[in-house]
Image 1: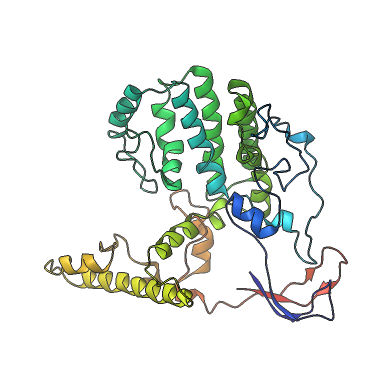
Image 2: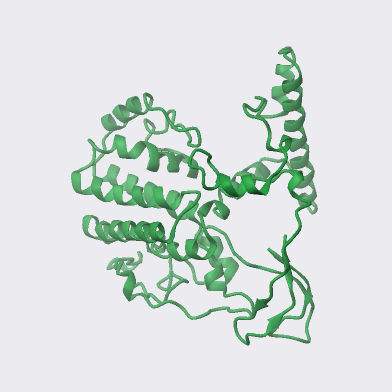
Length: 376
């Protein structure tokens, strides 16, 4: 969010003074359509990124999403363009929903329906999965594979795609279907990197285009969705906004789940109730962790577990205990032994850093100079 000192909008110079501008709309596919005023994702004009028209299949119900020749798609020209924001470009394709909450589940359902994977295969895959060592930043699928992937969340699908599936599906799927699936896996491996080059983005795009094209050949048209079409627009989102860790909705969805579990009376003022309960839970975690780090007594564990879900002390010192040095922060991004995602919170010692001189912002339409703004 860019916060202004206060300017009048270019499109209405005599109107209300603006103090903030929207730089990005990040939602799942249905919500993005409603928020930005685009047509539904299951309409014949489903894509807001291009002018591609999708006919209906012969059954008259499903949409025909075949055709993945990206070079022939005609991009839209500034729908809902504001004086400072191209809403078509600013409404991102969320990588979490696009990569991990659509295509993997749809293909798994199809493999089960076609009997490519049978009940015995799930049992065997579960046994093999239990012997695998999963990297620390991935979720272990303790029993989900044996239960045929019921009630899977995005982070679990992410683990399945990147860690489990290349090993477990190799001896289960037919060769052509497995090789095509690996195209999707390879694309995901590149796209979720904390830092990514333009060449890697283009390579991932080629993997996704090959994957979608082969899906058109290996399966019938009913398996193809608007989500698969948007795979080939994901490259533009990453080019515009950088690595996916800066804006994908994993954190938002986790906090959303926490808020939905808070009890309210469902009347006016529930927003204040949400905030009070959330802050209480945060301070409970701080209290428990500080207590565990300052004492070796375990008699209070039964009480502490009722206050918070995470009562295990941190295994590494908190970043807030260190003095912030900007040179070390920059060098860390170039050290392959340090996992830096770019969205880590900075310690309080970083706040007094002097800001660079403000830059001017040029309007898209009239190229008029707008007063300076500050990033917050």
